[in-house]
Length: 334
Ligand SMILES: NC(=O)c1ccc[n+]([C@@H]2O[C@H](COP(=O)([O-])OP(=O)(O)OC[C@H]3O[C@@H](n4cnc5c(N)ncnc54)[C@H](OP(=O)(O)O)[C@@H]3O)[C@@H](O)[C@H]2O)c1
Image 1 (tube, rainbow, N blue to C red):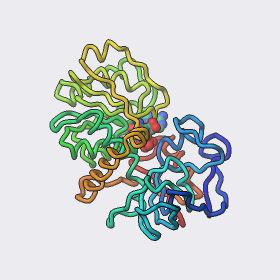
Image 2: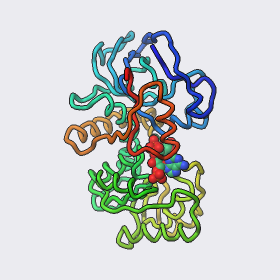
Image 3: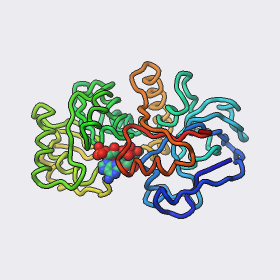
């Protein structure tokens, strides 16, 4: 079987495609014939040794898969060969086959494709955990989503709208804002994609306030960080919740602590991978609720580009170059 390997930490261009022996399932594991694996921003970090999880070299990146159960290990009763599954696996997905712990997999609904299955768990799982469990978002509240056309951002837009919030999408281009509006945002703002001057930061805060009727945003969902964070926080509402999702812009922002004081506001950390590990039952409940929302058509992964396995590095590069909207998926056998 073929796999894309990270043999030395570096940029996506340093990944190599190699032939490897097929894996065997260990105790409690299944081997999956991978049909699709989506790219996520953490792939860009993990191959550069900049992520929380640090697999041993060599390894395949690729955190989310859709595929077919090929073999079942000792003690696995939940799955049998031939079943269609989706799974969040951390890494190992940019390969034709992968052995995974069976408890990371879920059956794919009949009407969901392998591509959609590979683009589901991490993005929706993160945004649902953030909005439902961490922000306790209520119907009628305003939700500002930064990076609103990105992988996790677009799912926050869809879920926020499905939960009855008034969603304001912020992104680096009109085209990205339009994508977010077509997924449920009712207002949009464009922020500069380069350095932000003081005036631009003030204009960004003012635009958020204007888009939320002068009140500021009740909840801010931020997977971007960098220089956008402080002006966004300055436009949070009284008792607002600022969800710290990630730092795609590169810099981890620092916040003057007088700002949460003045607004009676909370800075709320969100770490879906750790939530799924430490609160497995609560995560399973969330995934079931998300699959039900998919079944009734309230959410649907937006796949903007597809690459064959040999070009998995390009999928990661597109994320790093801010070229993607929604998800990019690598399909096997193409
Ligand atoms: N906390 C968690 O549990 C969790 C789970 C999953 C992902 N994450 C984090 O969430 C962030 C987004 O992940 P993702 O998979 O959604 O990524 P993505 O699809 O690449 O989206 C990231 C967005 O960030 C914006 N951005 C701003 N500056 C950027 C830059 N210099 N390079 C790239 N993008 C930039 C882009 O939107 P604009 O061009 O519109 O600004 C882009 O759409 C990452 O930091 C990731 O590690 C966290």
